[in-house]
Length: 218
Image (cartoon, rainbow, N blue to C red; front, top):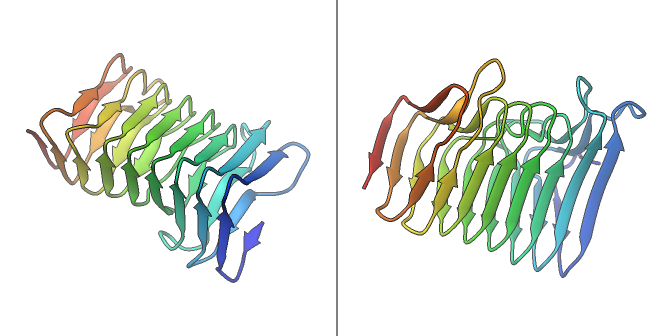
């Protein structure tokens, strides 16, 4: 599906939208191509799924943007978002906002993600078993949420901007870095973790934490 003239897709009121493909039997490069200004809104108990088969060493990502950071994905109101088994999960840094919902990117045969603003509020976030990065982002905001970034070949969680994490949140960045690079958590900008928050960085194959900016645990 190509959103060539921007626009909005609303999946709402319990609806389900599912993309499924096999990279060895189709020439499709992306399940969803989002032009500048496009939005995907999943709300009110609805779900969106991107399911890939036989994607290793083949094209077949779930979501591609035509311009970096110029499209938005919103998942709200007890909804679910799943990318499973695609080559790359999402490409070219969409802005992602998740509230009161579940957001999962798993089993990708390359990176699960690559950049973009990421916000999680009252939500469960999972990036696991990807053959590349798990959650790769720009600025990261985590409020009353659990973010699991486990068993990814490269970095479990890596971000180029700032990160804020409130006292009721948890990050698990465990078992990552078994590819040619990677580790548990890689931070660049200013990171602020409020008292009471929990960060677990366990059993990673390379560095547990790489810190290139200012990181404050209160």
